[in-house]
Length: 177
Image (tube, rainbow, N blue to C red; front, side, top):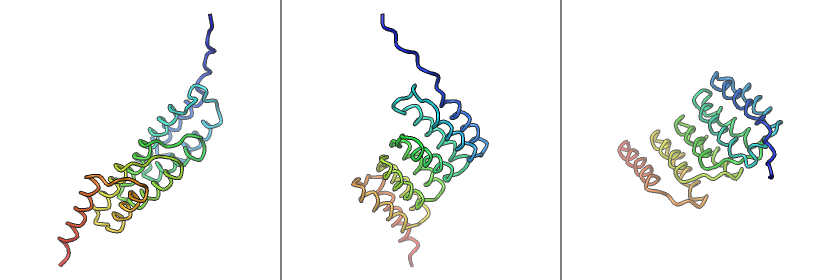
């Protein structure tokens, strides 16, 4: 009978666990050092990177809460620059939502460009979150920049997109003399 060779231990996992502990303490540089170490060891148990991508997304969520959108962005940047992993739609949405919830739609647009350049998909829903954040703060320039980026990337506006623009225009009309 043929036996498959046993997988070597997941040598990258302890580094991700240490990175998570550091991020929870708000120690982003220490976490990034651990992630650097994770890239130097075997990942034979995760040949397609799905497990590590899920861990990076978890770290981005925690990093957003403890270190702000900049911390989450640094984790994403590490993932793109130091591994062959590419962000998926969920990773993109985590990042753009973080920027929106922090009231930084322009930062979100920069992140969207970074994600697209790295081959990550950015969907209409992610742009909608940014547009609504801009509309809520009455930032017309950012709202229309988000809408332009959505269209430039070949996406169709959704009902949510259009309702955000209508809300922005309605609030602008209400404040105009």
